[in-house]
Amino acid sequence: MGTRQVSRSAVVAAAPERIFALLADPAQHPLIDGSGTVRASRGAAPGRLSLGARFGMEMRMGAPYRIENTVVEFEENRLIAWRHFSGHRWRWRLEPTADGRTEVTETFDWSTARSPLAIRLLGFPKRNAEAIEKTLARLGGMFPG
Image 1 (cartoon, one colour):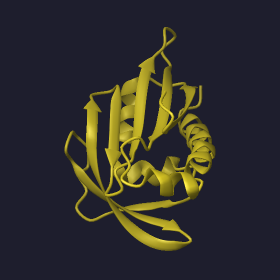
Image 2 (cartoon, rainbow, N blue to C red; image 1 turned 90 degrees about the vertical axis):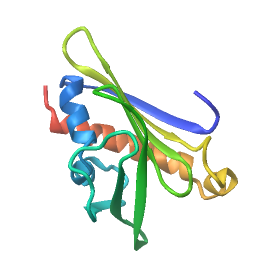
Image 3 (cartoon, rainbow, N blue to C red; image 1 turned 30 degrees about the vertical axis):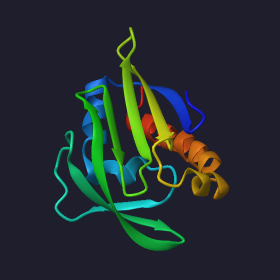
Image 4 (cartoon, rainbow, N blue to C red; image 1 turned 30 degrees about the horizontal axis):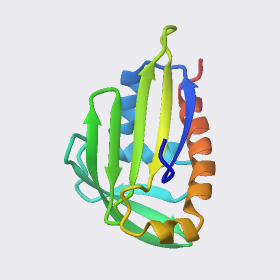
């Protein structure tokens, strides 16, 4: 893992296909968001994401705002990542386990950010690490074992 990446992993009691279906549907993102910033999908977001797909989200961090994302990495049922105008990426990697569950790794990758200094100075790596842990716990709660 690079110095401009923050990742956390958890094992979830569901097959990768079930988890990927949730991640590939922008309307479902507020259900798992542990940061408290993702409010709703907006606009004509596709019902299912694919490589190159664009989708908008209603957000709130102090004040409400909107963000447009583009899917930049995609491997069916295994990997999905999106970025917005700042260039950093949110990546989800799914690895099946021998017992039918899935190791889910979420990464905040700011190695591709346009302003990495601002991200560091504003404390986003630490805050996002905490939010990722909450997100993974919420995701696990959606698929109880």
